[in-house]
Image (tube, rainbow, N blue to C red):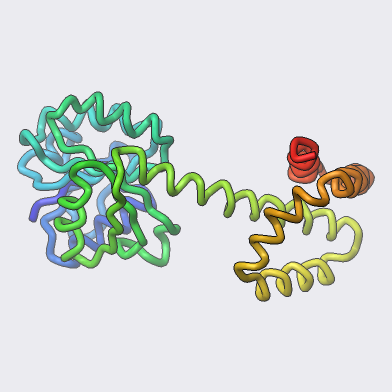
Length: 250
């Protein structure tokens, strides 16, 4: 199988290298980065797409429309075009509209960081051609979960998860920065670790119901926490957002 990879940065480089190592005929294009070993270098997106059975767009959400426009002249009618960039559902749907049926566009979301996984990073795929994409790339070692939904559904799943994980990371960063300023970094790290280790389904339910039941009291608690962080010289961004959420709940 011949596979075109557009974008050979961190994710594209690792995935294209794994595909080549697994026996795929990989042709890559990136105006800024050279291809890894085993990947054929090409002079344009259209050249990379010429003769390909599958195209992987791995550049960025901002560059994805240009990659599509530049690659389309080299694409055979009906070729699978998988957009693996992190983008909003609307941006994925706009790509599908721009393709205008000349390629079968698949919305693919990578659900973990590519470093450490490469091609085996867990993926979800949506759109009418999602099953065809899974069948094409899975033999090389990829793991693809096909979602029952249109282009944009995979992006929705990924970004909803991102709200939680990145929001959790932001809360931990803010809390530990404040703890370091207060001289309590080791204590708070231990406390956070203990809470994460013992978390279960009941923890989620307490977070959902407890925030509503005790919203008024917790508003005052987070307002006090905001003043503490101000005194410590740490911007209380997440703390302020938490207080605002509690205010809405109250």
